[in-house]
Image (cartoon, rainbow, N blue to C red; front, side, top):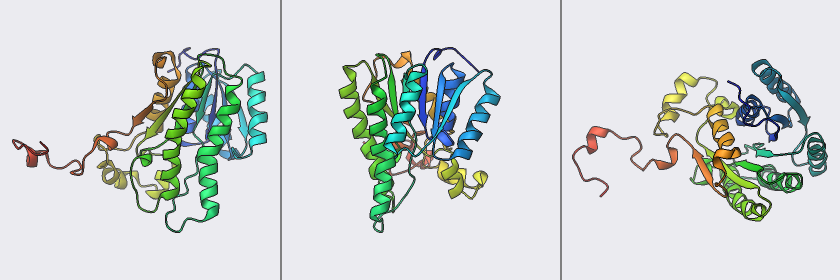
Length: 270
């Protein structure tokens, strides 16, 4: 389904070669935006663009293969995008999925912090110079920002940092009329999750689904819908906020899904 909600606007989406980034780029294109897709993986970037062009007739797209840690390359990309029609929406979806704990190396910490935090901060700072009032930034965080998970110091710490970064950006950019929010997905069926499942969703979704009240994994498109909401006029009074798109993961108590019959007629939890 295509709309014109974002017609005349330009969205920059990092990590647009796969997963949530690709789904978000597609959603913006379907809503009429000109979309700049950014990713380190050139083949994935080309595949994402082809998929969008197949689904959205006349989509206005451009691709930029670069490492978001290359700040000079990022600046050149943003300047080129701005020169072609301004920048109105930024989505920082590029991520390092390094998950290491006690044995994390300095190099792993540097990469994790660099991609997940520093790159998002620097890209937003430079992009904001070309963003008019009414523009938005959405940072992709994670439920991992809120929960301790075994052997995941690097990933979880950087995702938590994104929440603090979002609040700081929202404060400093509010005077320019730019709203900044974050989205925290639960377990989403992306390439990383697919890899962990060995490609067998039927076997693993019932297991991982029990971490969520909805008893299933999410789709990248469901996260993209939340990003577009925060990027659109319907969220005009929302800034500095985290939107959980986690199927109820963060609402679940220590009993998990439990057995409803087990607690029926009791005052458990009172």
